[in-house]
Image 1 (cartoon, rainbow, N blue to C red):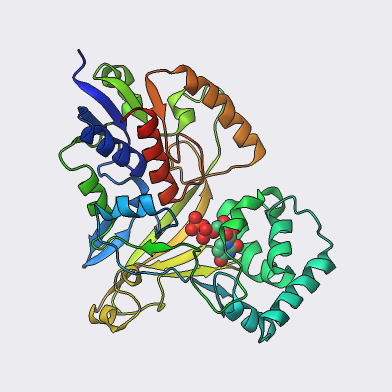
Image 2: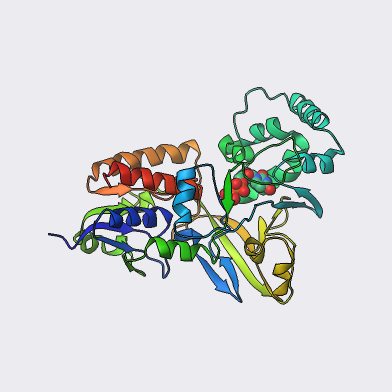
Length: 373
Ligand code: UDP
């Protein structure tokens, strides 16, 4: 008899949801994480009364009612709507690409004029079947927007030319012929009041959690504790990189506490030129208080400049680089993973997938169902 039924490796969203479902089904669960905190990359911590998104901005959005109801069991959500601003060499544009953007870019006033201008630029570029992010972007919004709002930002974020990136990345962004700056096409959107850490803590309530516990450092001992392992770390690390290393983008944040109530007037400002070294600046207080005067009651503000870099061993992996080379390598690792019959691999790092939070939760719920929980 082993001490636990399930050992969940990683206290991020996948791990926390799996652990909750397993515990509710009566299983004895141990969650471990190598970091000193729960929450994975959605971890938030309070600085001067402001919830700081320490591993990058996370805005919860979903069309999946089951997932929305699920997260609302563990947190109350505010009514934050993501509407980032793009700063191209001091020119400000609304995001996602919508009538406000088109009006500022071209002076067009009606949806018909905007559609016509996009069509004109698409035809001039001669793209019929977009084969990469560059061609996909131009065919969605035309050359001007590609040059000013997409090219520099994307190349900074991914460290690769847009012509070498998969087109699905840009399809994350809506293109609208309406005056609507809501970044997401989602029925439900918001940020947990009090931060994501509290939400994950509520998911893990009553479940044993060990922090600063590195599974791969002492795999045999941990494996001996439980009948089943749910592994949410990097899949290539699990197999000691034996087939090669999967590429990731890493992100570094320069976070500052500023002695002013309002630095940029918005939660996210993207710097879309190629020269500015950071990709975006996050002003964390605006995630919490909405855009009304309440936030101005706090005399200070916390901002994070976000710098993107190629991942190397020892760095935090953030975005999987889902090009053909990496996807094929992942598939080879997946074959190995399928042979580990007492281990479930799930989440962004174990599935090598550019996952939104709601999709991770949906996947964890599906996984627990398949496991008979
Ligand atoms: N993107 C862009 N300009 C922007 C914002 C986004 O070109 O101002 C593109 C870029 O290719 C990026 C992709 O859209 O990688 C997805 O952006 P999103 O904001 O969804 O990325 P995340 O928030 O996940 O980092």
